[in-house]
Image (cartoon, rainbow, N blue to C red; front, side, top):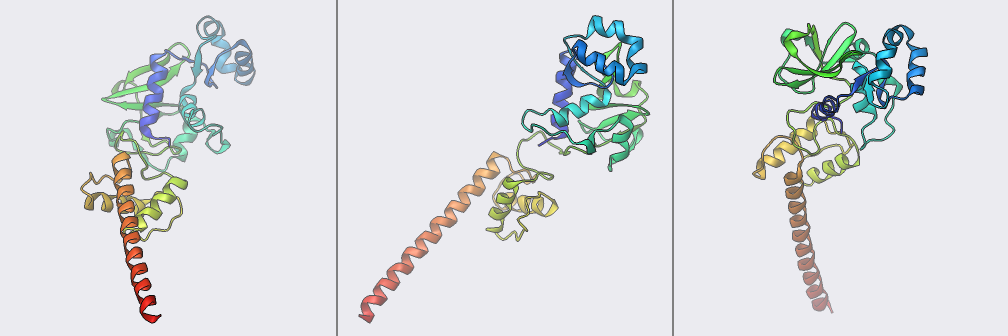
Length: 259
């Protein structure tokens, strides 16, 4: 699952490996062929920096500002072939598509929020710091939130935002694992529709189960919650098998009496 914390770790790698900036790139290792293609596509953005790019970025991974975020969405090793033209957008386009956003003075201290001003976007990593593909002469760098004139913040509309780095199924997840979870929770009275979508009702059911089981009630199905759920289901199955065994004995005794 793509999360805000995953995005933060991704851009930290881009920072630490000193990735470069070439307009229109999304994490490719820059070759002369790619550069020529981008030059033909965006001549005004690249031609003034052509010598600098050839001297500094050939053979290196490069991004542009929104390309660094799209690289996390599209090039994730765990989720191959995720390109979608619906999220192939510009920095301004990503802001326009975001449903959760605001002016910079209302921003919370949530790692993985995106920050922007007109035509540019970066990723807030916490502690007042931002990682951004800043421009051709800068590459991917860490900057101070307060020093760059950011005007707005937004939740990237293509990832899930959580409040913890704890790994596990959580709100926003979808798929067969969630559907199985919903069926398991229903064994303990949750009455969920097993639609494979981890929404508010599923999160509430998880929190309720965690609370009655003596676990941290955070709505995240981590390894401890999963193990507890499995253990309790096995106990239910064992109890059912015991009851079935008793019923078989009763029917057997009844049959002998009727004979």
